[in-house]
Figure (cartoon, rainbow, N blue to C red):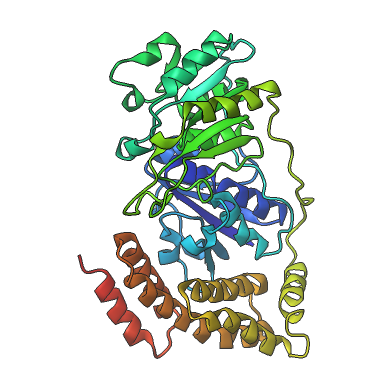
Length: 427
C-alpha cells in the first residue's frame, strides 16, 4: 500500500513517530511523511535521506489524500483524521498511551497491519559536522520550551560541576531561551542554537546525555546515547524515551498529584534530589553502552494475500465457528460492550485495520466490509459525545474530528453528526 504517516506537535512527538515509518517499510509499504510541527522544515530535515520514507511534506497543501491507499496519524494534531475518509486512517488516542510510551503506541498501528517485531529505534539524520569531542564528553540540555518552564529541574549546575570535577567535558546545548539568568552555562562548553542536524551529529559523537523531558532527549534516544531524562509534571511512561539505555527519573508523586501537565496538581520536578540523579548517572558512566540493536522483522514485499491471511488469523482465531463476515462484525463489536471511550476507540481501530488489510477492496471484500461501516460510524459518534464532555479544549476539537469522520460514512445518522460538529466548533 501507499501510506501517508503524520507526525506532529513538538520535536519529540515527531521523533516518536519514526519507529512506525520503519515498521511499515519492513512490511513492504511505500511510506510518505507529513511533518505537521511548529518546528516545520527544521524538524523535517531530521528525516532527510532516510530509506524508510520517500517524500516529506511540511504543509497540508502539499499532498492530496486521494493519492494514498491508507493513512496513520501518530499521537498529536490529527490533521489526517480530518482529511481521510473514515475506515482509511488509523490514529493514536490518549487511551493508547496508557502503560506505554508514544513510540510504542504509534508502532501499534503497524502491528494492526501485521508487524510483529520489536519497536524499531527512533530515527534522526545527522550532518557531517565533526565536533572533535574528547572521550567521555557528556551533553546536557538543562532547558525546555518557555511555556513548559515548570519542567526544568533547578539543580543542573551542581550536576555539571560534579561531572566536570570527575574529568568529563560537559557540553550545554539548547536555544537562547534555555539560558539561565545567572549564566552558569559559561563555566562549560556551550553549543547553543545549533541546526537540528548538527545537534544530531553532536549527540552521536558524545558518550552520554542528561536533561529534562524535551525534544532533545528524544534526539539523544534516537542517537542511542545512555544517560538520564528527568520527569516531574509530565509522564515518564507516556512520554518516556524510546531507548533501552536512556533512563527516566520520575519525581515522587504524593496523594492528589499526577504526572500530567494539565492536572490540577502536577508533580513538581523540584522533588527529584541531587543524590538520585548522581546515583543514576554513576551507574550509567561505569559502563556507558549504546542502545543495542532491536529484533526486527526481515523486510518483505507488500502482498495483499499476506495481509488477508493476517486478517483471517487475527479475526477467525477469536471466532472459529463463524463465517469471515460474521467474525469481522463480532470482532469489531466486542470492544463496544465496554461502553467506554477506550472501547469505542478500539472498535474504530479494529474496523480501520480490517479495511487496511483488505485494501484494495474487490466485490467480495466490499461485501465483507459493508456491515462494519455502521458499527464504526456509531462508535465515532459515541466517542465524540464522550470527548465533548471532557473539560479541555483539545478533547472538544477531537470530538469534532470524530463527528466529521462519522459523517463520511453517509449513514442516516449524519444529521446527529452535523449537530455535534456545530456544537464542537463553538468557541
